[in-house]
Length: 272
Image (cartoon, rainbow, N blue to C red; front, side, top):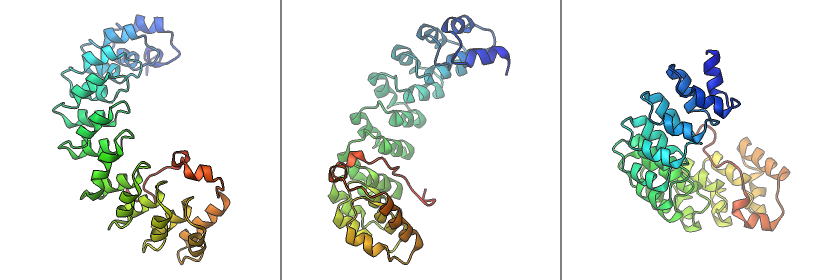
């Protein structure tokens, strides 16, 4: 990396200096300026018209790029520039709506990932013809629980898995998924903060040890169930009950508020 490239990409470089370098003949220098979060909005607007696609791509992905500039890049002829616009949280709602109809699935997928995509648009993307787009919409935190629940009977376990993890899922849906044929889905239910005592009691008798271990770790698991799991034949389950004993939460107000839990809800033990 040259000294000029390092200067162009360093966030501590003064904005005025970045604007001076924006017209540099070396495309790599311009690329680094286009991706620099310290580059002024006016300069980014000018660079959005650069002939080099990599420069435009970096402008499209820059979190400081104004919405009006992203709107112009949403019509770029380059697929990957549009993809970056689709994933940029600064993209205006109307831009995301337009890109949700892009002929290339990678663009639609990034719109489905975008944390600013509206729930209404996520419902549309959740029914996309492309599997990758649907899956990305499914895991977006703004996907309405009512729509997400429709995936409880999906053929692919990954879809059912994410439904089982959602903390807004009603107990009746979790009860259904607690009987799922795939242990990964049942394990996800056992991690869900909305799982009822009855659901946890049922899963504590699951034939798969990992599911029982997740039940042992759940703060709402009844004490009599924990006592039974303390004698479980699997060492991982017994270890989980010991962990709970050390981190037990007694505050009923905390237990009643499922939004207060902050553990990571994700596949464990290599289940991907």
